[in-house]
Length: 295
Image (tube, rainbow, N blue to C red; front, side, top):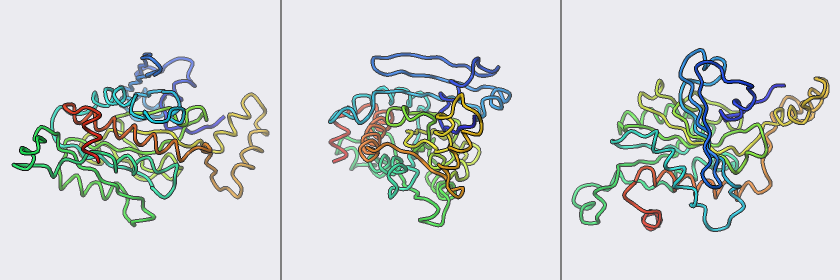
């Protein structure tokens, strides 16, 4: 059966054994499960159907299950993210997606909460005690239908102007399983195609296209309708799958499935990812200090 997913973990689960050139390890830390997959050969990338690079997936309790402590897992995600970051240099954070479409709004909502510090320089920063902060800029490039500009084109211009050490791109992802929506975060250095989570992939953001390391952070918010049909028809005849796919894709239109509480899920996921990014970039600040500076 065919299925689509942005999660390397779900691809790994489909394989009885790892192909040559791919490694995988798991770790449990309290309520969190961490899976680290590394593709380090071209042959492994072809079999795994993903670019070479590292993929870290953090599985957590559902974001919608707790009320006021979205940041309790942020330090864990920050630790995993920090391992991908260059030791020094400015960082550009891009919130990919469309804020007007709830399942696609995680990127923009996250970027809006990232602590931008690039403008805090010189005597002002010293007097305020902020001269030790890492230089960070945040941008929300929008989507092609809003701006007429591909996110890659816009971000290339920003990168050429600011010359950051790396780019962190935050976006919504698609999962294969409904159980992965609202409790999973993937971090990777293998690049990202904006809009892939909502079946509208644009040109990729990667080290090759941007000229600097690109670190993607994604939270799955949708399951493709045909993928859901494949799961429901697992073990059944192909005709049953085709009938289900026809019902879920009327006139060939793609259907995306998302949870009923998607508004809450997206808001909390964005808060958590933003805090993780802030903690990873500003190691000298506590979560409380970051919240104070955001207000």
